[in-house]
Length: 433
Image 1 (cartoon, rainbow, N blue to C red):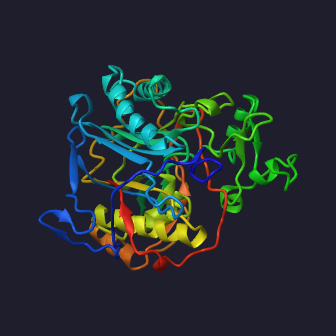
Image 2 (cartoon, rainbow, N blue to C red; image 1 turned 60 degrees about the horizontal axis):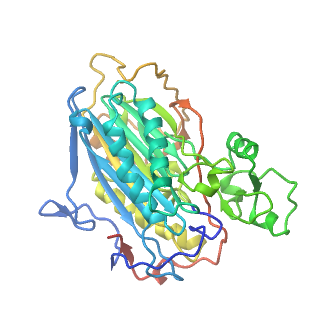
């Protein structure tokens, strides 16, 4: 999402970016170790403290902007393994920039956030505290940098693996979701909560900081501004509630937290992350970290369902990028930038039943809700994947994390739902440089 003008708070400077390539349906082939579509090798890292490993892949795709064909990809990502030289600590993050200098903001944050995190001596003892400190320090550094972040910034969704525990820090509307094997079913469980004015707690918080919360139609006088109920994003995403300075028509942010966005910060938009803690179990199959370019039109359940159809995460990345691209063009005349990291959890077993989280003072109490879907017997991960391809169903997202702090974030759904376009009218996807 972005701000009132689609993805930017101000007109974007066209920037050259990447080469275009034709998109075809993902195929499970590799040539000399590199994926036939993404041209990257499959990466893997071990977590020796609990004797499992992570296979992962990432794909970032520049959006299709017919009015700005050379517009830069404002998404960025960071994958850093063995943080502080510790083979059991690994970092995965996606950063979705917005505004005129959104690309500069997202690249600055993806570099500095992990560096500050890695320099924190309390990281292995208290990852939650380290995450909070790192986000706030990065935000201050961005304000003090040469980048004009008055109307630009970035969201951030990050996952820190510390032994057998995931620490998920979210600022904004990008998302992390985990797939869990539950008997004969796969469950999609959200690891983060989107931070937008659709959330009552976030809406009230920014109002107390002086923000006007109105849709564009309300600001322009087409709808009654006294109506302060908007349903949810699925039903009202075409004209979402946004944040405005009193008696002004900026910044129009549809998110309540971000890194940067100095102007929006004056009305309650903050860089404080919501940090969730999740204990990894033997039933956890993979987790997905992605920008809202993926989740704008695809639900967590749909994304998990697609990923589960592929044994190779590179195939899944390519397929989800294509499906996201198609979904955007079915609703609008453009697409957003799309970035997705898929991390498969391989070889994990609860050998000793321990619940070490590598932190101090953090309460871990996973909870799950389930719904019956099918009665397929599954005896192995490979059989699980085969069952998925045969119509295995995935449940609606449920939450099992314990949110350790509730703070502030930012989001921006697009304004116009223009006429839909057939996918074949677009001749190719452009791959980010």
